[in-house]
Image (tube, rainbow, N blue to C red):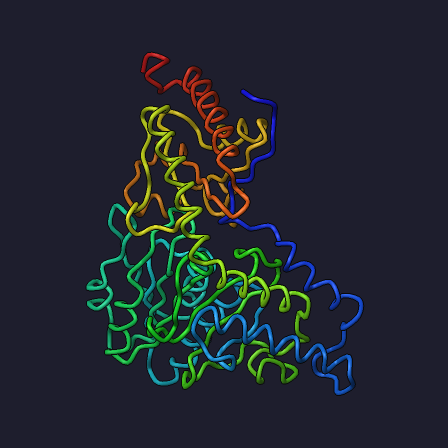
Length: 393
């Protein structure tokens, strides 16, 4: 192998803040640092910056600025959308929620909370590519269904779901529809009006913006109760002094994502395919998890049979390559991936699965270096594995 280099291939976990984003944020730490609720000049400068960021994010997803509500994260946006919608509709007898088996834990744990509160939750299954059949959603809707929540694109295997069709079904039944678009934002074209969604969650740190800032799109006309109480921030929907620098950074990141969307998709999907082709050429006994046709452009989830993914991750890390064995929010857990279980990957192979996600700063040189490190690491682990062909299994 060539001289050690540092290669980051976990862009689905988080992205670095782009220079343009950081430059736009800096003055709001030290110069225009006012509270956006204040009436004097420095406060109004901050208020105007928040409004501009709202416009930028709205433009990226085809929304109206007044439909964008900033939160602390995508997780908060998911919690707000699902829990508050369900809780509000319970007063009218609606005690049923529909979601999928492959949602992010932010959504699954919200549904578990609702179950403890007496709601019924239907978890829709997926096929071997991780795709949801909209007909199953339609069949699951009941007269007492409060909300349907299906993620736009999966964070582990990158599968993109038929959101427009599912939203259409929910609308025809008079049911609120929410989608977690945290992974989709900046990686696919999103137009909330074309999709027909009522609620949509996004996060700044997945599109080269700062951490600690997210947003919830609430379609005009959807009555979603507040979930934080105090001041009148965010049109009275979410109390608390605004995360000014985070909002400014998110706004700039959203603007850049919109300007560069086409070239971004072409570039990272090309690199992803380049990497996949060479992995197939060099390493036998692998499985590609998720749909290759309906997939996020930079995502590649591969099962390397006969090895432990955690061991492979550590060897790659020693070589300077950062990858993931699944969602960053659950990577510390040894519990098998619920997503890979849902698509039918055998339990003994789930632990040999690694997620590679490519981003704007990835180069072919990075991928060539990773291929060498990956080839060497897989061979080493299979040689000592008690269940590998090389060890006589």
